[in-house]
Each structure stands twice: as C-alpha cells, then as structure tokens.
Length: 267
DNA sequence: TTCCAGGCGTATC
DNA sequence: GATACGCATGGA
Image 1: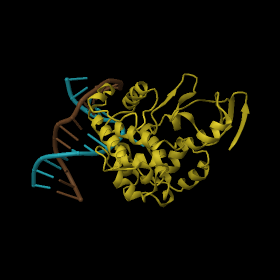
Image 2 (image 1 turned 90 degrees about the vertical axis):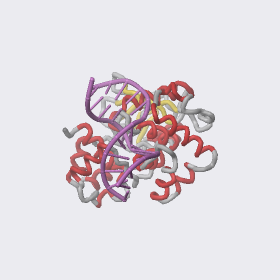
Image 3 (image 1 turned 120 degrees about the vertical axis):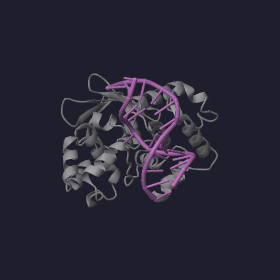
C-alpha cells in the first residue's frame, strides 16, 4: 500500500480502483455519489469521504487518521489484493477480457456479514434505488446500520416504516435465528462453501442468490457466485457450458466484472 | 397503465 | 426435480 499523510487527510495511491465502479455497482448500498465525483459512506459505524485526485489512481481520504486506514479501510477496500494480477488471469477469457477492459476499477468490498445478509434479503426482487431507500430508512431510524441486538423484538409490523414489503418477515426470521443460537455467522464463515450456503438458506427468504451474496460480499468467500437475473443472462449468452477455468477460486470477483459489464455496457 | 427489479416460498405435478 | 405463480413497493 502506497500512501502519505497530508494534514488531516490521507493521500492513497491505488491502481485498479474506481470509486463509482466499486462503491456504486450494487454490492454495497450505503455509499452516496457527490456532484464533485467524490463518495461518502460507511463501513459499520465508520464514516469515509473519499475523492479522486487529479492524477489517475490517486485518492484523498478526507479527515482520516492513519490508524483508520490501517485498521478499517485497508481491509474494507481489499487493498491487499492485486487486481492487476486478477485481471491478467481473467483476460484469458474473451468476454472477461472485455469486461475488465470496460470497467477495470472494480474491487470487491469486504463488508460486514450481518449488513450484507440483511441488505441482500432486502434486495430480492427489488431495484437498486429502492434497496438504497429501504436501507437508508433503516439506518436513519437506528442512527447507523442496526446490529442484531438493535433489532431484537422487532416484528414485521413494527418494521412497516421501512416499506420493505414482504421482506420484513424475512429480516425478522434472520434476527431470530441468529440471536437464539440457531445459526451463527461466525461459524458459517469457517464452513466449506456448500455447507455455509445450506446453513444460510435455513433463514426464510434466503435462497441461493442471497446466500451467495452474503458469502461473497459479507464473508469474502471469493469462490461464491451469486446468480441473479443479470447473471442468468450473462451465463446463457457467454457461458452456456460453464465458467472458464481461469476464474477458479475467485468466481465471485469475476462475477462482479461480468455483472457490471452486462448491466451497463451490453444492450 | 403496465412492466420490472442483484428472488424466494409454496403448491402442484 | 422441475415449473408456475404470488408477493409489496415504487420507479420507469
């Protein structure tokens, strides 16, 4: 990692990183684009305002202590991973080569497991602006993203203010099973991928897609491969006989490039 | 107005 | 095991 401290800010040199492609691509829902091209948002309770500097691949983390970069953002922004190397691997495949060329600044965020699980429960059969709206009301109500403890005792009725529709009862079931010891996210993190998915699917409203999003975005299980309506189209169109070998072990990261590519570049 | 959205539970065969 | 349908809400 290459950075310098500039007063209260940190200047970060980071190739293979684009703010919009990473923070506004449907993997996280608590980032806001500002008119000047910067973004502000949260990891757990930590706030970050980050903006691009004039020089490509250089970013300013506003009012950020060096300790916070090392303890939080280094991990969250997955700065230990060499995406240049990943993209070289992916480029063995013709379609992935185009997808990586099209949006080379995508990174996988290492999000909190509970936030990812609950966010993707809310995401089902829903569009990204409305997902952000529901999560915005959730965070506004609790003064930050609510923990499992915060949500104890909530019911589908008491969560009506979220206007999350039929998903509220799924959130309630997730809170209950994670609070009464039926399930443990800490334990699920350590399980083989198939068992981890099966455990998550014991929650009502958690199927293959939401489980894989939780594993990928909330537990950094890069082999998890969420298939939504967009990825179904991508698979039918480009990979009718399965994924190429070059993505093995990091299918989920390849998925991010393909998702963004088919959703925004291909008509 | 109708269609659709980073799906899933349930009924039915 | 596969397939069809309903589900809350609101933006396009």
